[in-house]
Image (cartoon, rainbow, N blue to C red; front, side, top):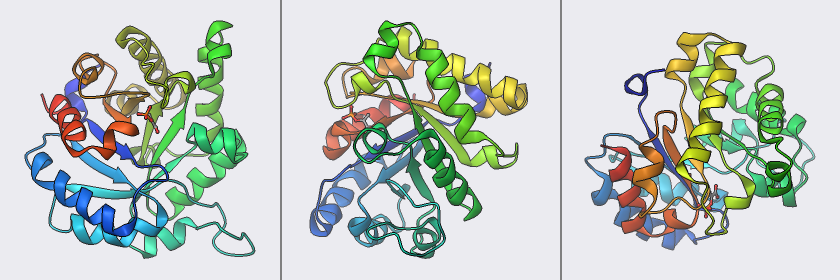
Length: 255
Ligand code: PEP
């Protein structure tokens, strides 16, 4: 499998952080630091910050994404935002299946599939998050868990649509904990995800498919993680809120 066939994607997941004014300031700070990046740069921000982020990112190489979307077009879903609404706001990228949505807000493999489907149907690119809990890793069922998450989320997704899917492998025990998977652990699962894509689609699709690692990636460990053959970028939480740290990760992905 050939890494040179893929362009790395570094995406920040801001979670529930930053007001619109703080968003403008942070995007303005990140912009010059990543201007010559040789990878795709994305900032996924809270819904209320989308307009500020889109405005601040105008004319730069930073793409703006959302952190979730609902599967229905519209309707009685208080507090939710549809993929169609995001698209109408000029947002082309969305995260689905983040472990915090699965853990705290009842997202299941089936609702993650439905959210992913809605985003694809609205022409968006999806960063689909999968990953195991610590107990599952300790029970040696990491790949069973991850492969069933991937298979359910991608059910019915065509090979053409796969071009608009990125999978972020995020071991839940490494998210926001400061505990990073070793580069070998990250590589092992990212490689297995690529092999699963080859099995579900074909080798051509798998070779160009982007698999990110996420889980306490930072300016210090990015080089080693991103140096792995099957790690094509990162989904970054905490470190994406500090412009110099985020830029350092973008730089590591640009080598
Ligand atoms: C995330 O939110 O997807 C994430 C990986 O967070 P952190 O980098 O803070 O572990």
